[in-house]
Image (cartoon, rainbow, N blue to C red):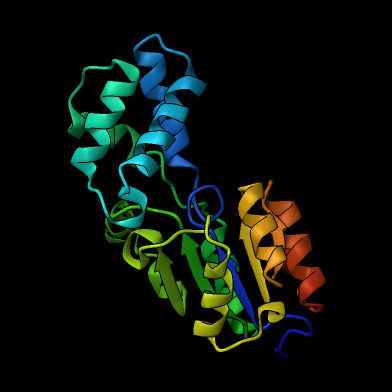
Length: 210
């Protein structure tokens, strides 16, 4: 299969793109179990994850849960609550065949995720890293997609010009920052939109809808 006309690499977010968004759905479930507002608990979880530095590896999970409990008033077993979250990070079943097709087209594939050490646990459970040429996790990198320079950094690590990469994320802010740094970027809202964006960037892949 010939290479793609417009891109050399596709860069995927993990939670919310490759997999269901387990952090959001897990915190929603925790909120429901405690009779709390879902969005308030999600916001508290996000603030705790970022505020403790866990997302960029300067804090740890114990720091996160302590801050989360303080913010929400929830009293619970961290081991049980983490299971509520991790169990909801499920790899979309159509993703591995799609990734194989993209690799067969000649594309370089990467993950760029604002995740914690949980990403390593999810890899141990689901074994998906082998589909990618590069996996970059904010927890290991020490910086996140909130820093626009990360996008040109990953392009450089892939050995391509930013404009030859298609970045896929479900977070509008991340998509905007990627575009500002010269990458092609797609805001993920579902399978059909993603396949259309890939076909546009890589003519010849239209049959991915099949």
